[in-house]
Length: 146
Image (tube, rainbow, N blue to C red; front, side, top):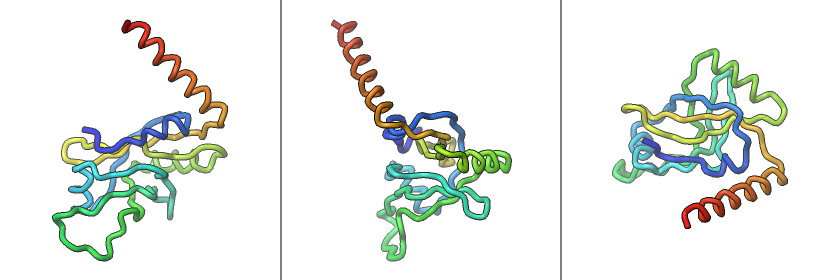
């Protein structure tokens, strides 16, 4: 079940490769995430001490948890990956023009997983072409329907 999607990612970036990672969350963050209170805008992956972390992922405070004065909804959260995947992603993140972004957060059984993508930023003319293709597809669908 999908909890949150990064819809802007497909417009802003060209997706080259996708992979799945686990997400380290506290108990109240997990409950809030399962209610769909996640925002992935402006989120990206970085590495500290060869460990992958996701930055700027906003998870709202879980209301029934009571007052939590020191809770920061956008703190960095660790990702769970295999060592080979970590070294591969570190290499890709160093390459010029490539970045690692989340596409969606979802549940798999009782676990909260995140789908990551190795992506390349689009230029302005690429975005215009995407808009043109989307509008053309929409018109063709309307014509087929009528």
